Image (cartoon, rainbow, N blue to C red):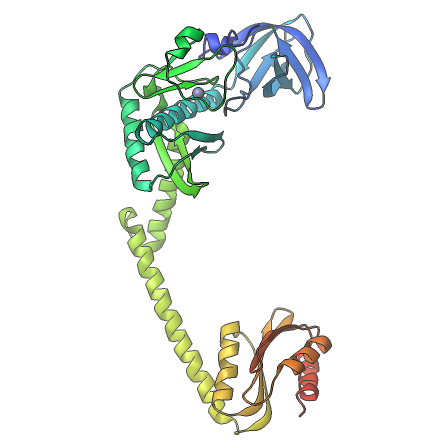
Length: 393
Ligand SMILES: [Zn+2]
């Protein structure tokens, strides 16, 4: 069978069909079945393969899990069981999956056509997965994309026909159409009148109204252009529904209505930042109070602490040095199985001692002459003894 003569091209809406088994061979990816005709679309043009079943005369089904066109142009159905050559089988395609592909593929055409018309940019990459991903060759803002989205949805409401044609070379020369690659042989043109003309081998809806909705979900700047994530039809509705559920849950958590989640979250973040500032003040005053209880100018001050953050550990060490409590000050805070340390001095270079300490206490870390920090993987009493040795007390 020649390309473009298969059932999925003759009738994009064929969900069931009968066909004869030409061959059925066990391959690496399961059984490879070739039929004399098929409604199963093989992966290609950015569109994923159809899935479904083939029912044998005996009444048993095999599942079709992938469909590809081989090098000689035949369509290979990858199945979880073998079929008998010469038998007639009844094929059923997973229509929900196929219709999703048609809605999303058709939506992608409209979006790419509108962007091409207004900005002259090309669709340079296209992938259909959980969402449609399109790489566009030039820069666009989120605001510009919102305008494209509106126009794309207006194209849906206009319920335009999506026309397929097979022009000969002479006719083709008269048509300006989008194409991702240089084409040879028969070209299949997909035309959304006034919106897009594109060479494409995929399956599309018969009319734009069937696409239902086109929604952009996010974008990033990518290789001088933008990468857009979008979805159409039921897929878009599913994503919007999930996010709406999330909005409702968030609004309950924030005791806000769904239109003011961002404001409510900003308020929570501001309150949290104010609490953090208050905690820092209280912790600093605790350090000052504790420093006040210690004698001045001790040769070495060692403090083992529980639950201090790394920033707080450093702050306590600085506080003890600022208050002139020791020539050398070591503050350690327990972290799981190790101790985070900050060791400082106003008069002694602590780096050489740091190296020796790391070697003896399975430590790592370093810093400046005035202050070093890191971790020791040793017990408290061992650390205390080695600190006393190495800091010459
Ligand atoms: Zn297409």
